[in-house]
Length: 434
Image 1 (cartoon, rainbow, N blue to C red):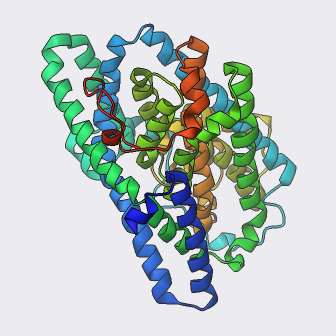
Image 2 (image 1 turned 120 degrees about the vertical axis):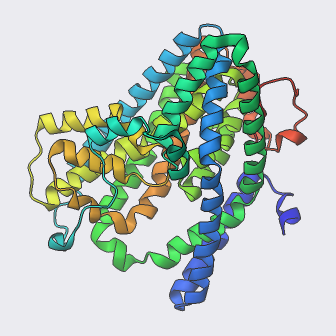
């Protein structure tokens, strides 16, 4: 089966898995086939577990290597600042759309849910938890627990120190490059299983979530999908045209494999190698892409940290009968732009939502009302996240005049391949698999 699939482009393989998964999911739900639902759940769960297994070493080594690699990038500080600036600009636009849709659709009005039975999620966020949670008490514990935010902090500190030390740190940097190459190669094998993982993840979602569960939250679910679609297919193309003088169709042709994988895997960090490979195919210099993409995978969350918490906060306020004023909407925008790193690139946006609710003084139990359909929402949220993570370095490179426009215009004509098959120069920065 694997050899047969390899005859198709990667994006087509994902699409085939998606279609087959939907069909099997409907079959399992219509005929109450518990064994099929369980099998789909196991297949999808194993795929996500394999992706998560690589997250700690991948994030640490990728950021250390990318920070050190900035030594050879002209105007590195300016590039970093422009990347952060565009992260903030696009996040502000996304959260504004989320607030606007919330005011337009009133997703919580008329919803009849058992508010008394709602409980706060076990994993919640507050500004103090966020700030104190950045610094680990035990470096080893950050890796064991898979705390991506703490791993990012450690990697940035270690990378900056190695950059300043210079020659004396080269053996350590070389070790990180080697570990990164090994992890990426192993992760490439996992990514090759994405069509099968897609089948399991989508199939289980279809089998598990029927209209009876979605019906009370249909307006809210629709608003989230519409908001993400507006950012994906209206805002991002406008940014590409206005800020980068780029053809949006070419961008989506090059970035689509990463967006597809993000939709089914629901993990920005797990999708990171595909995102980086896609960004490089779009003509972004590898030295800059190796910094911007890992950084974006842990902090750039237009879906999870902007659109979703804005709509969810309005939903919770309406369900609990709490009036929100102009100050509250400004606070939502502030939390979205500043606190997006709290999502840390992993599956789910509950921490970001509870951070927003606690800032507004809304009941944290309101987040519990949305937990049942979170996986359905997380698919489009993560796809939006990853599209933004690919967009910003592309736009910045275009504005800096470093984008290879010939590569950009032909990105969609070349399939994502294993770097070993791409015949790339071995002396360059650690190879980035598809």
